[in-house]
Image (cartoon, rainbow, N blue to C red; front, top):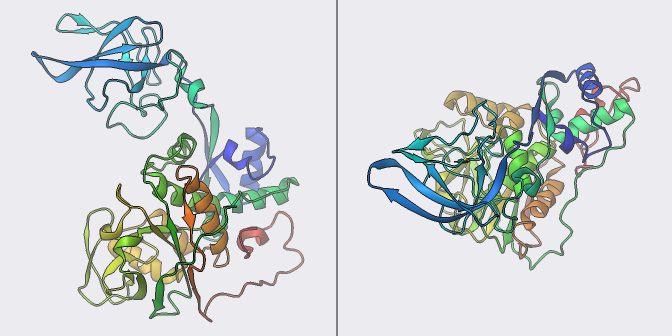
Length: 428
């Protein structure tokens, strides 16, 4: 589990004494395997605007890009990425810049034409994990400004924790913060949930055929969704945590998982036939998962199916491709559930399909933290979807097989012990 120092400090005032925090976490059984720095600015990388692009008859793999770095002087740069257009703001590594990999940007040329700098992908300057093209910056940045300062990026520290199977709560920031707060005497508060008034009632039919394998299933409908890129701070957090930003909906789901150890899954609500059915698979039944692979299923696999009883997800493991979030998605059906740990583990192992969600489900999540997770997801998504409507009276099925909310504990299990590992109750 990767823990960002700055993110941890949003749960409590833990400070920035890296050695002290690493020692405290290790003493609690959360062994710190490594401590690394991220987000260090690359001096010399500035905001530039694309003026125009041109192809050269003798250069098949690169094109000529003309940019303005804020001083009105037109600069020429050769570039092998073609994802930018006139008017886009992009990072320009100016001449003399030393890149993170040690390269020094010099006026090297192609076909006798010099390049006055280098246009950068997010990966090349450590701002994202996307190396497929040049990083397109927000349109409101000032030309010539230091890219890192303009984006509000600052140096941070990442603790890489070895979280053992008996500490499932510490697969989320809230669990780590609780335990660390008890040890250091720091007051811990969960992140803010959604404060907006709920919209008109809108529920989905939910039926659970195997109540032991799925004792709780919550389906919340949210409309007013516009699928776009996440706010930069969300994308950076996911990148620094080892996850690739995808879009604002998926990223909000992943951020909630990292914060609260509560996996969620967003379905395109217009593709689920107005219902969810949770049942075991039929032998030889198939499902195309989000990674594009066709999975042949067995009767031990628990499925999420739509209103037509068609498989649309492997419970606790991975969603299906037919209902994934896309650019046309306008209404989301958010699944937040509690699945039997051993069943998720069997399916993930048999299919060789371990995901961030399955890792958490098979070790244990809080069945009573679901409502808080839904509110947190909505709060995050609202930042990029200001017209988001969370509809009241979503469907929340709770079975008698749900684990008890109250847990007994011996008195000596206090303060810095593992008691905080599984404290059930609305995310607090």
